[in-house]
Figure 1 (cartoon, rainbow over the protein chains, first blue to last red):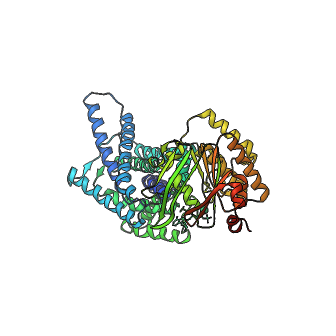
Figure 2: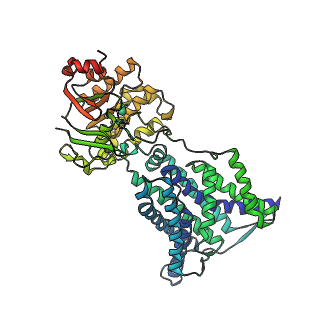
Figure 3: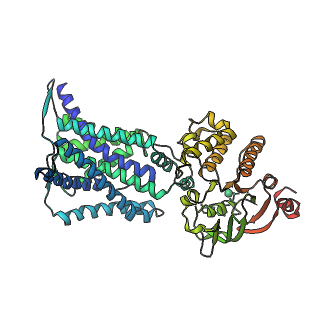
Length: 307
Length: 237
Ligand SMILES: Nc1ncnc2c1ncn2[C@@H]1O[C@H](COP(=O)(O)OP(=O)(O)OP(=O)(O)O)[C@@H](O)[C@H]1O
Ligand SMILES: [Mg+2]
């Protein structure tokens, strides 16, 4: 039982990473009918931006230029990095996808792959091949709760992720821009007739997805403090799986599927040798998809998307 | 002159849908364009609301401003041109209230928005009764009411209406046209396209006849109703 709870906590942590990244995939897919295959690399860029911001803020604090408690450094790092990374997303949309909005979907898909490669190799060119160490922003403390060891970092990671997911949910349900996003997912052709600019909503969708990926990148950096330019590839693919499994454009779906992936991976590794982890885990997911080909949920959309 | 269109040409994938049409509308008028299936009626409205690109040589002005300088969303929010598109195209995943609020996306005159909502609910009480219902679950008639209400909220210098009578029972159709007449009396100019020529010519003061991408006739509704060709082709003899 203790063993189970121990793994449950790990699964929640991994699920948080997958779910946060999957949300960006899912929103772009739902609203723009587009697979943004560069999204995993935006997670990587977000982690590096987080690294830069964290290093900068820590340096300022240690110089005595500003006096900040550790938790505030962490919060600032997350907020500033999310903000900066959202512009990376906006840029990707503006330069990569917008010119191809009327092009065949396959062209848009390879655009994503190419942008991904450009981001990876751009990072290599900029920082060289060495791996960088993410600064440890919080002192690690371990609590023993009835034999289950929980670190404050894990609690923080899962807590921050859940908070972001809830905030996104509220934004999409309640705000005016969220309403426009849902409308665009349903029928983007006539949305301009409501006085809404498609370009604004598209940019906003990319900005939010990228900001969430940046949050995932920083949280990952806190848990596993070594970054490398290719760290986004596997995460990207797995989050993509979660996004599709969750159902087209569904926030709840992407979140649940992200956590499900975390659970399956961790619990498979609990029983089987870890080299078999992904082999078995993704066979299970393939099986789930066979029974639910449309995923768990899925926002409805208009049957006719032409004029 | 409120809206003036000159030498309008539109093609879809290199097939020309509108050859070279010119027409104009004065403030406060109700004007209709009638024509058979595929004549280009919907395309004409889409060109005015900038949903489809027009070919070089086309001139369109609205209140003296060059329409071609405005993208589709600004045509609505800056010029007050609203468009009820063919097939209504409501956002079925949003509620009635959300559809109406979305139409005010670019407006920030809070008090007037409330007034306008009241106005719409007065004309179509059904919409208020069902305001929390998803638009996708409405009946055809209710959808048409919401489509008109939504257009009214988005801009009302001129309303472009694509077949508002489509799919409505005769009684409901009359009440929809009554509502439109009321809006017109309050100052909204109306450009209407219809296959139902009889209804359209009863409602409008003037009309144009569109035939495979060309305007072939124009005149007051009375002239058109009495025209033998129109009688034959569009009014069932
Ligand atoms: N999205 C589109 N793509 C390609 N061709 C189109 C498209 N929409 C319309 N057309 C073509 O343009 C021409 C004019 O169509 P339009 O929809 O404007 O006619 P309409 O007068 O509104 O007809 P209806 O009364 O059937 O609605 C037709 O030949 C049609 O096939
Ligand atoms: Mg039509």
